[in-house]
Picture 1 (cartoon, helix red, strand yellow):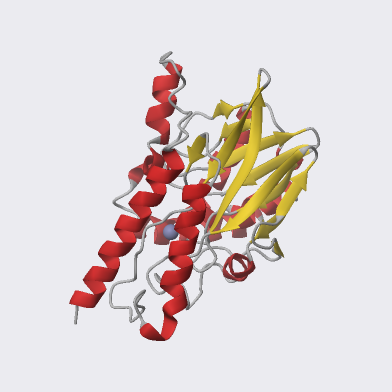
Picture 2 (tube, rainbow, N blue to C red; picture 1 turned 180 degrees about the horizontal axis):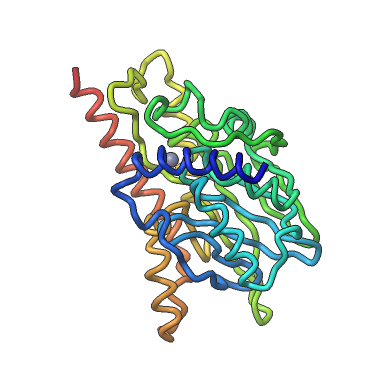
Length: 290
Ligand SMILES: [Zn+2]
């Protein structure tokens, strides 16, 4: 069994390595740390994985690449937590670089996996999802055997922690952003894990965001961006930490910069504006193209 698992990981690591050769930071180790209150970072240097501690177990958002599962699990343990206390695993979007390790971490911890309605379907087919704009290019990964669905604006709970799901489709059809509250020394902040807002399609794919037969693609995309812009937002985190300058903010915080550079109530709005720019650029390119 153990041998089989190693063989499986080896094979996937190869696939992922060839697909992400230009992103060495995605597998680069990162010392885990506290973000704020009960929120911790347990991802790699280039891919976020967020841990939330409750009075009755842990919630993990995103697992990163399949081959990073041992690294994320080690980071959880390095903070003094037990893997079996991870009760719930959530996902931003079902691409290999954020969802790839979820099946392994769910198996090793016994955690339940919860996602948006479409996100659940995507996770259960390991990213092999024809409605994905990057279908055919985004690497597949070990599927999650069972995923429960949380509705838009629905909540999931572990102990005293409540996390709200905000459907923000666009980058993938199942894309989801998550919010919760974390408190430190009596000061409670709005924590936001906003999904990627990049509008990418696979090379050679006939997927068009601007396809008149799928007007809902752009409508839903813009709605999701507006949702993120309007969120109560004190600390923004993102699936790729560099999308929100997250690790730079952490470094400045750790260097003693005051006020805490992680706290930025305009960060979600700026992130959303950048998303609109990317989407508009993609639409213009599609309309100008052949
Ligand atoms: Zn993606």
